[in-house]
Image 1 (tube, rainbow, N blue to C red):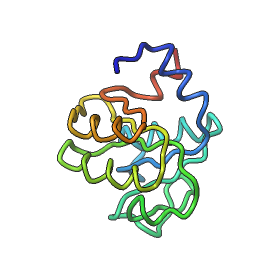
Image 2 (spheres, rainbow, N blue to C red):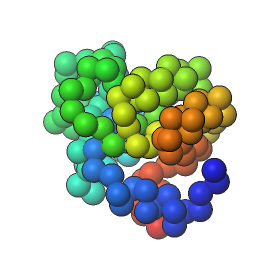
Image 3 (spheres, rainbow, N blue to C red):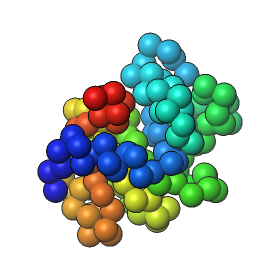
Image 4 (cartoon, rainbow, N blue to C red):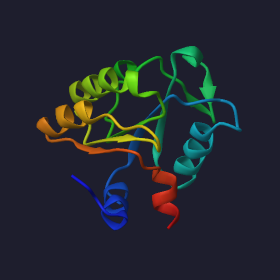
Length: 134
């Protein structure tokens, strides 16, 4: 499913909670910048990074993994290398998310097919911050 920028924006306008996988407390990292932008836009963001679990990133409790979040998640935004995407996709399917989104440079067709077979929208190689800015 190739979605145009307008369709991607509609997806983002219809969700409210996002688990950001690979969140970083480092303000120079893209994941930090995107997380701050999404919070400022009004999204409920759950940072996920096992290296920072139980600490706070941008004032939000950081989780070790997606399974540890005991709240509804609409979208998973993945800032991890391709080799981690399949496991995250499987966890996201179990969690019942509506959208799985991989950041620019991350393409995983096998994970995409698995998600689509579970009726989950899978967006690859895009940045939600850039979509919302335009």
